[in-house]
Length: 145
Image (cartoon, rainbow, N blue to C red):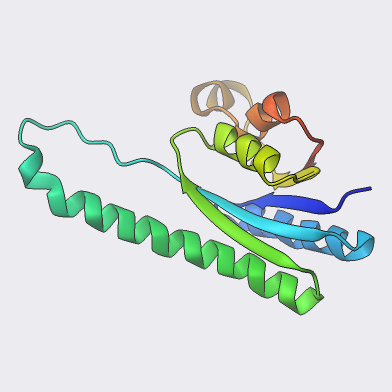
């Protein structure tokens, strides 16, 4: 059935709960999990970019540290459950595109992720990465709420 389950995470409590459920599913069906995080690109509007050189480096270091922390959570939980696990992160301003592209490139046959439950105007303004993944993904998407 499913052999490789992609577990995208943004490090939120809802995402961590979805990761734990995804790992339990993987354990039940003897699948492998792949933890995944998308780091946003650095953007700055300024007349003097020299003033911000250290800021971009600091941003990159902080984002990488957070990504490693989020992915370590997945790796630890998968290890404790006896589930094979890999992890990766990419830099991309469009997490839904990064998630669906990575799932396709790595042969994941299921994406399991959280929904933050936004609705109404907030959903229209902020958008839903999960909804966009549902629309773009070539493989099935399991959404935990």
